[in-house]
View 1 (cartoon, rainbow, N blue to C red):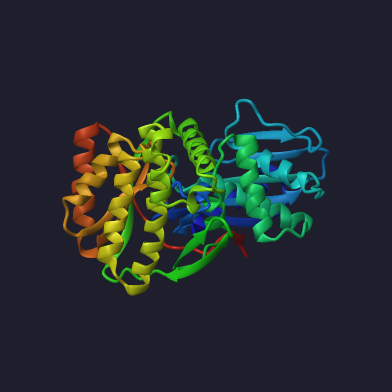
View 2 (tube, rainbow, N blue to C red):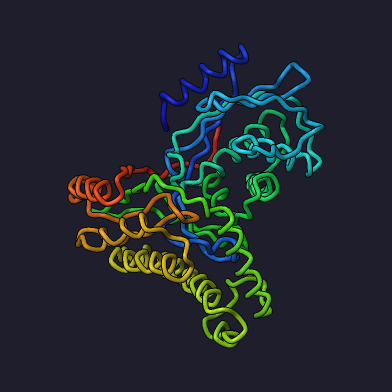
Length: 382
């Protein structure tokens, strides 16, 4: 955890509100495999990381609540009985949405102050949104003794994103951020919302993230479009979600859907199977198979689900040319953000140098490279 960031948030809070706060850390997440399967009731393989949101809270003595985004130096005041999504809506809708969804559960929240900052790189696909939502619900649960379980809290965070932000996300991001276990990834069944932890030991390999530093404007609308396609095909198949369908089932309705939508549904069915196969490979310590599954995941995201972009594809193609990288794929919703790469530790530094130069030469802009540690989920900072 970033001790300098903790100090910054605490000092900013005290300067603005003249009192000592309750401090919460809520992590971002990576996802080893299982992309766009969560809203299809499928399997995903995420882990919380040591980058995230630090939020500071206290009860307000005034008739209004205040939220302060330290990094943007922006603050909003709001009244708890007059909540509605902000039309400009950036960060504030994550905060307002969580408060509204808590109220929808007939829980009483008093006026409060929050200040927050984070070290999740913008647009990286490591889900700063879920980290912020979880920090708000966790902090308010502590502050006002609301009696919410962690399971309740992640559903509140997810609803906030649906209803105030307008992104019909699955449950993976909120779950991984809330329930993360240090040095573990979680094989999460998004239907039962139960997970199995796997201690991560990649032996002489490690995970690195390469951020394209681009975000193509399609992302939110394309995400919702794809969710809608999946739901309509599940309905045609008369199943609850694509998690319940097989490739054979899909073949039976091939003439009723467009070729593009057929491929999208096929990708989801195949990716769901890859997530399960990846967990078995991990149990066996079979990193070669894990890497092949990760590459296959990217191929599906690029060519079937069509949520990649030229920058992500370039990074994965370059990784494939390097025999020391067992697997690489785009991570997150798509159209920008990071690739996740399983690389031999002795090769990491030379590949970082090579890929930084190659990316800049090709796109006339820089990529950013991060190492991450797997972290505990949302918790109070003592």
